[in-house]
Image (cartoon, rainbow, N blue to C red):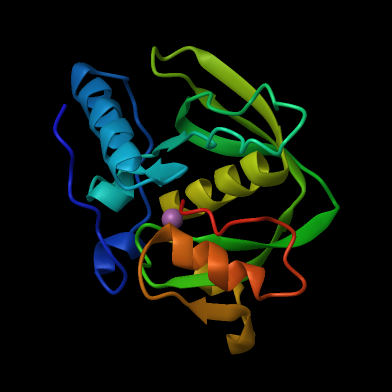
Length: 192
Ligand code: CO
């Protein structure tokens, strides 16, 4: 399972609309395996195929394990979601602002308004229909990845430059930068 190179901001590939997958072939299986390895190596919590240069509608999401101080483990934590041809079947009217980063936009995190809860539908990695109800960070990650399939980046949702924060390197700094923002609701800047 080779790691693939992550396409970064200003490469026009990221602005492409990805194609629907007609058949979850062996090639798609290999793509998914490579995406998982690439995401883990980069400490990300989500990745879309277009971020490794493949314009097909395939996304993966995996939230990190909870920190020691979190009391109630969320059953969705550490579960790997693979969704082929993902769509938002439902979205909550309620939205919230939260901090977000992107493996394809290194050095920046931003406050992005997203729906608090969504239902994602699509196919699983075996081509079977899949429906996932997600809220909070999981919902945010799904919305971010589905955006990638349409060539949209989180920075497109930030209209106020004061809501973008530079980070010099790595996730630790992202977390530190996040902690300086009074309005933020999460402890880290997830890279998706
Ligand atoms: Co991203």
